[in-house]
Image 1 (spheres, rainbow, N blue to C red):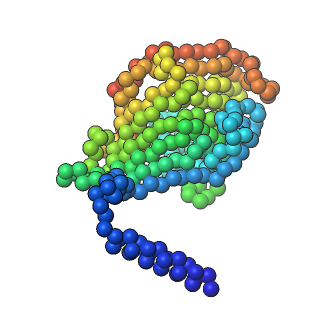
Image 2: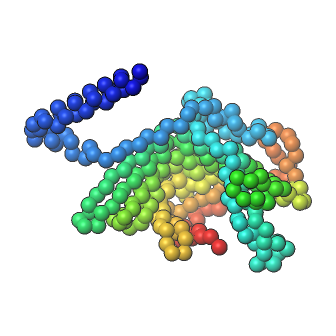
Length: 299
């Protein structure tokens, strides 16, 4: 019986739409419609207590969403698996060429507001373009989950002999805009990345493990920020070329890298601050990345 109210609602919408279509539009009304077409998509993940998921091993972490009591829109993925189906034997480092996998267990993406996508099509004087603009929220945190290497038994099969190489880390960014153009690229690149991240791009709880020897390389907090600035300016062109995914830095400002509490060796199991084997803080000042080209491809 629920079908009848639904049909009635659809019919009412159709009738009202037809009535509006028959109304005469004056110049003032037409002027208000300028730029109103296109598609807007707001992606609002379910609200969860993201801060409660701070580093389950050490209890370390940062409260990113203090204004909302740790609540944020969160997308969770139990496991991300990248299967290298032929392994690596050609370099001669003792590997056998068996299939392996890169595994991210416990991946999360949390934001302070919805991700907004705006889609428009433009004739562009004979060179039509599909424009997709993606606006990220002011606060966006990527939690990588623990990163491991394992024997790959193929898609859908269990992994073998999984070994953790990187502890879960948080990457704090936000307020970036990605403008994607398909068909033709009036902006000069397929994807233009722009924006300014307040406080810089921050990576917390970096820890690279030596599984065989038992030690680790750790950085409590790594920050990328404009030289003499208070934010990180994002400026890149991204294209898919014949050789792979190509990222070109167009940044006009220089970059500082700040590493707090760099530690080498055994971290121990104590709570924050973890001080064993600390060599102090490290800074790289005034890195010029303009024109740098990064190409990512398979082999």
